Length: 114
Length: 113
Image (tube, rainbow over the protein chains, first blue to last red):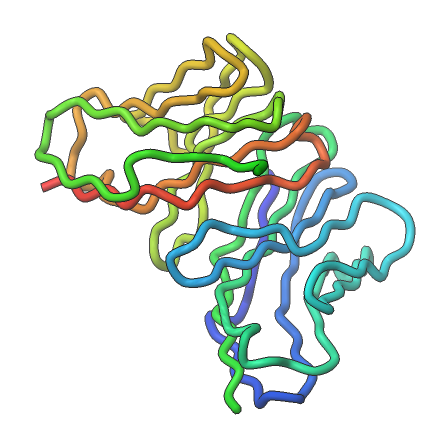
């Protein structure tokens, strides 16, 4: 069975500091990996995805994520956090052998303080 | 504007009263899906559809029905709502579903009393 874990319920960062939101996954084969962001009272918005190729994926709003196959991780990163980055972040995984089932993590609340 | 539209935005109902949450997309997407979001549980998939007349169960399908008679519409039906279906519901769509990004609606906050 496939699963995804976001070990931190909340991450607190000072504005201007680098941020990392962690994600680990478990699939039987090769994964498709995604990050989404949810701002208050809004639907989720796509940030970036890993399908194949370069392990470092760049996405929207200056975010990037690194795929690490040996550690089965896909951590989200940003070199310099903004207060406006404060939101709920979801990691999601789909087993390439599965046609429709995308599994989401429980979400990590990112709080960036001025 | 490309979008996924859900209605209503908020809904309060009573146990056992049938309801439908509508979802429509204007991007000619093949794939559509319903999720529910609960605190501490993240998003869980209810049903999904790979194309017209093709639907399949997600992780938490009990108590829900869906239909996909047209490509653009994917309504979620609760035949006999119960309080444990109180949740925030999201509809989403993507071009083909396999490795495409999902476009989400704004959500429907459902309260079943």
